[in-house]
Length: 290
Image (cartoon, rainbow, N blue to C red; front, side, top):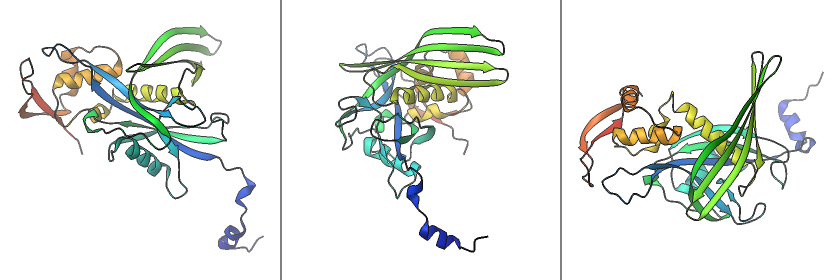
């Protein structure tokens, strides 16, 4: 039985006994931006946008990627994510959550790199883009995840479902397209999911999987949480709020049903929209339960 103290053990501990992978954070930053509308009498449609940066160095030089970087030795993973968000957008104290840890051994050609992806939802009116030191450009891309094929095969204990998606990212004269395949396996009471990139396109690393994962998470959470309000300014109309929901979900909602769903989440104010070619609308605020 050893009589060595913990202090003595740590003094002689050899950290090189085990390989130490690098750790990074990657930020999936979403916002909602009004589409340019030539008819001022018509409410502008909205697009869901994700922030991408163009890499200035190897690997994946000149490819588009999520903003992110290596975690410093003196900071936590959450602190690194907050730092990266601030460096790219100038924002702090916004909605952000950790999504998933990506650890495939060959995901980064440089060395073994484990990445924690985060999702941030921000109001477009507060953003100032500023590309980091390792980027030559930063742009908002309209993002869509489109289901192209859905096939289910029965097995003895359940089924295997294969879905093919196209992840479309468009900004000005830049268009990126990545193809992914998701495999859902049901075996008795056990459900597993796996999504892989089958055509990478011009997105670096495994960032197409990160964006796809974040889109699925946001669409699921919007049904039972208040995260959609993080994409709006402080004052908004009910129509604008419904547009945000529809933009994220990818389909139209019945007006009456939607208003019943959100009536306990908003409070009306005595303010109205400024007249811009149509009747003024009452403005509302998010009714926090805190």
